[in-house]
Image (cartoon, rainbow, N blue to C red):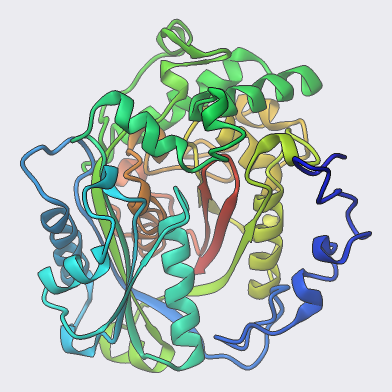
Length: 433
């Protein structure tokens, strides 16, 4: 397949070294210089990593709150969730996911929010990978602790998206795609996912109803989440009759713009003993990029970045899709959740429609997906989404979800799936108790 403008980057898996096969892993298994982690996901000598606290602000529209105040709300919630001996002086680094808050604070955002919560003079870094920024902040924090650089690290994210005009908001979402060949050519974020949906429907017979079923499920879950942006249910009829945005995606197929923040406390196994008797372990994680423009990709009925990131996470955790009991996946659009079922290995390619039709991802199904309400109902403050997923999974695995109606009972292994843009970057993390 033609791999990009100018004819470079021909995609033929296994032929060109820079596009190595999944079996070989990227870089042929070269070890990550930070953490001693083989980039193909295999285990090597490294420290176990735990999450011992997790917090989140309310997600929604908050014209009266600054990014500093939102992050402080999440940080305070995180601190209160630590069972004992929380001491901010032990935090040696902070990795903060953020796209750009509509251009309000592009420089030194991580220093700004870190000092505001009482963490000056530490190693701090803003992590930007579009909508996957939070997932990459969590992965970076895990690598830091694995490497033995710090024992206790903060991973978080913050975004304030509702202060800007609609046109400026579209601009900031558009910068996550290929500016030259997508945004300046007139495409939109919803338009790109609409193309993916059209192709999936064409190849596999996926129905318009299947898209709306995702929205109905996630709004039902979000109605039970006191921190969700939209705490109300909807019906299949209403979801299907919503105004069209980019065919076949209508208003109920699209997540909203959101203000919010989240924070998780990551530490070594030894340090975890002083904080809690019930840590949540980062069993494995994987990240992957892909061709940014969808026209450069080998196929458009899957996100190859998700497949590769999941492969690496499964390999590091010594687990497979069959071991995942619940998941928080990146449903920026309803088609994105259907693609995630397939790309994460929860069902076969082309069977996502039947998978949701049969109720598998419902709370009470055999593998609940987006018990939080997902991006669709919980909200999508871009930089916060990935660590917001970790917040949800931390409480799910500890059995401490606020409203028992969406608590997945006795779950021990969960998966987080965080996607940047239309799949240009992906982070997958497996947590266990």
